Length: 419
Image (cartoon, rainbow, N blue to C red; front, side, top):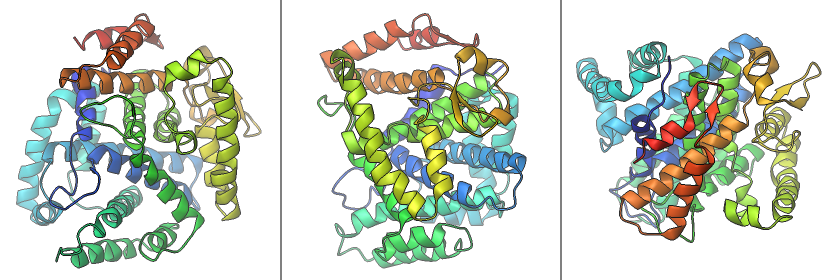
């Protein structure tokens, strides 16, 4: 029985506190959860582009490996916290030291992660049995990691002109990405990152990175502040682990993760309009959705299709629920491959099969609200007195007090644990 508890959700949120590049001058704070979000969006892109010759079953298996590998690496990183990359790479190069570090990491993770099920715990341990691997999913994750970290480097480069390490750091990113040049999409990403070339793929990856500039709850002081980009990763992670808890099929688990990972992407175009505003002005939500869809077509979908990435465009539209009306509606693919809205009951029953390519709606909305709840709750616990935050905590507790997802996850009881 998979159990998702308060302390595990708080562990996932801890990446919002973890500073990156904290030995360099930065014009803005860079935090771990934002980097992980950017990395996993790029990993999704590369995963979609490097599937030539794979059967649907093999592609799904690779998708699972990418999602779980990314989540495992994040959990590992949460424990080792401030070990600088050069030091960690030296540890990885020494098998005895790596085993000792990893054994300690497992000790820290076990009390919170093992409750998610023995199968997941065994997969996590197996993933770190070897420090390096040439498995396709691992290579995709490594390339995505280099891109996301390199993108951060481009932000701080101009702020540290005196730093003697910069040339070495940039060379490590260039050389690292060059090792993955055989992966479709990596050369375009690298050219856009370091050579300033405009490519559809590179522009899309940079566009998504800009979501770390958008602060959530922008009119309310909080500790820690969270970005739209980091929030999307948390929703994706919550969605994956809740999917395990409700016994979702593998395709549904992957779709829920990737849907969570991009669900707020339209806020690049409209900014973060808080729910009370949307709900209090009757026509506003529909107007915003219409504008978002129009701008997504102009600035994202048409650009990807025009650049030869129609598959990425179609998949992204499915995750965003474009054809069914909302990312928070349950959906499957029909026999002709078209998106079709279904009920939660159908999703939890006959449609919970890989062949339907199913994705959740209500579960994703619960995860979105739960991430907002933890953001507000944590700020209040950190001493930020705000009526806005207190109302948000009360509203979400009240809204989900009686919600039970597919008879397995009692959301109200989970929220009640946050005393």
